[in-house]
Length: 114
Length: 114
Image 1 (cartoon, chains in turn cyan, red):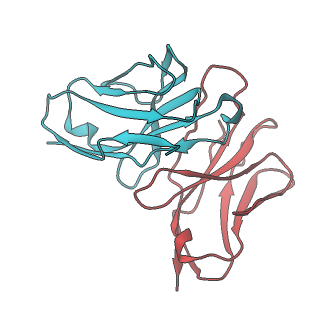
Image 2 (cartoon, rainbow over the protein chains, first blue to last red):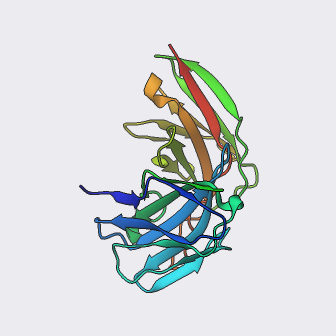
């Protein structure tokens, strides 16, 4: 199935634990990005990548790491989870030529840190 | 990117037109207006975008005032499935690999009622 796949859909972590949120797309999109959405708020950009081997920070990068070893995958790592990282995380991708509007979003990962 | 102002919530009767306003009084000449929406618990979905001319597609129409300081997204015949948060985003289209990913604000929560 074409699209952006995020796993897991739900996760509960204890403070201090680490984990990786997975994001994969099978559309050969060059651009990929991670957003977080807190209750009642808009999306905020965490990290993004414009191609394999290239990543950069967004608006709220602290506490998160990313890597882009392949075009298809863009995992988001939480180094030491904190309650402030409780949020819904969305991954998005697009072709470079459609980078201004043609974003496809995943269905999200709902993370709770206790 | 220019700042946008949207009402936090609106109601619309099913079958009627939904008119969602957006104020972007500081917009610059090369900034486009984009609209996305987010249905509950899903990732955002692209709707439409424009520079200065009115635009229409299968989902909606976008009306931009002559001075470009405001715009209106029109859903011509709203259905219950159009209940969502609608985001107005103003930005310069990304012309290089520097990223410039989407920045989401609070949006307008549209409730379509039977």
